[in-house]
Image (cartoon, rainbow, N blue to C red; front, top):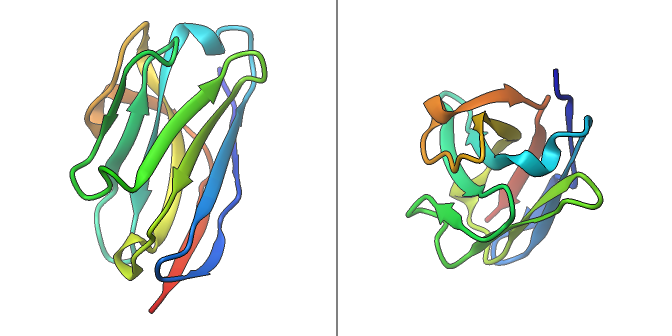
Length: 125
């Protein structure tokens, strides 16, 4: 069972930037695609970004494309989400997550299994 611990959330003004980190436990980190999802108050959880097991492929929701960048460091068992040009509508709890299957690249919520506890991102206007 993998454990995922997010950090880096906070309060930022619109147009600002934040970098989220997710530290994963276990020896199989480099075998799985990883992703970020978010859930805003009163809304359903939604997919944000995903990265393949070796970092060679990435996939983004249309709402964040061109503003967010997902990356990973397999030597550190860590995945990142660089968020630039933040908007108030990006306000949400952001969750780190892992693909259900090894060597996959999830592109929707159902593709992911393990979840972190989440980190709050608040963007003020």
